[in-house]
Length: 362
Ligand SMILES: Cc1cc2nc3c(=O)[nH]c(=O)nc-3n(C[C@H](O)[C@H](O)[C@H](O)COP(=O)(O)OP(=O)(O)OC[C@H]3O[C@@H](n4cnc5c(N)ncnc54)[C@H](O)[C@@H]3O)c2cc1C
Image 1 (spheres, rainbow, N blue to C red):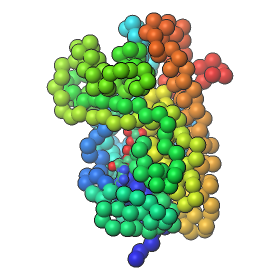
Image 2: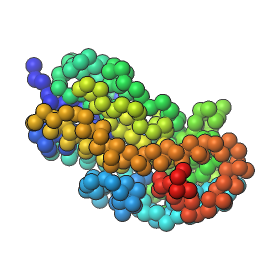
Image 3: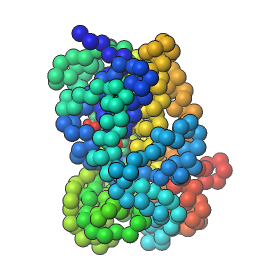
Image 4: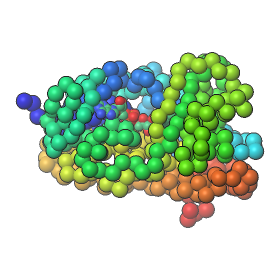
């Protein structure tokens, strides 16, 4: 029976990045992924801030190489982030973004992990974790360290008695064929109660979707979506349907318990105010991977993982949660939200979007 240094559950951005850096540092790594094909189906808006924006958003990150997207994964670049208030006022912010194709992007990250020496087993579901053992539908596997990179409803967290993100925003969307301007639109207010509706342009299509909070809405995300596309006058030439749950309550309290680490959505590593999780998953995955490698080679405690992700991305995650909590107070009422946006103006809104404090202290 082979015993690995680490078993990583999930080959999304968090899992593949953790695997790459752990293997690169000499650890013997197995990644277990339930999907038959990595990255498929896509449940994502696929929008990322470009590298120059990432440097401003996450300035304490040690290594910006992590934000290199790779040309092949890019579907389109955008230059404007447009916030649309409930009464239709547009706030255009200059913002350099990249829309990726996650079918390619996630596979590339997994290939990088393989090249570094990680073993990746697809089409295999982890059904339980017991101490150092990962139970799957293809048998049991053993490791010194177990990593839950298995998304917002984490099997690893459940079996290890660890917390999961408290609030999850249900999302629904479609990739719609057509020509769209190079502008990312975010519509707020009753159009998407407690969240926002998005239009993210790709090469010859756009990801159109909504994320809501259940406590603000009696309707399903799908009904909210149908109303949005009809109001916005978008012709429905559907290429694909997307959806899922996006953590929106900030990081969980403990991302480390004994020999187990949680990374990415499983740890609530998502910007609560906008639902963006890929860049944070990658930063925290790198830290987790490097920590595992040092643990395997020198016995360095795993504690460093938690200390280091908090140092590098804890501030922006906390600011983003604060902005979301503030927005929750005014989201209930379209007129109040509209007025708040007008008072904040383009500059204030830009600070919210880039996860900075709005009034110095809040
Ligand atoms: C509709 C929607 C739109 C979004 N849009 C954006 C966006 O535009 N930009 C952005 O930055 N973020 C976006 N996000 C968030 C982003 O998708 C996540 O933050 C990101 O994918 C987190 O990566 P991860 O590796 O932690 O999790 P995931 O990408 O979810 O990967 C987890 C992996 O674990 C596997 N898995 C789960 N359970 C098991 C098991 N028991 N056994 C084996 N494998 C398992 C899954 O199959 C999956 O491959 C969006 C989310 C949603 C729901």
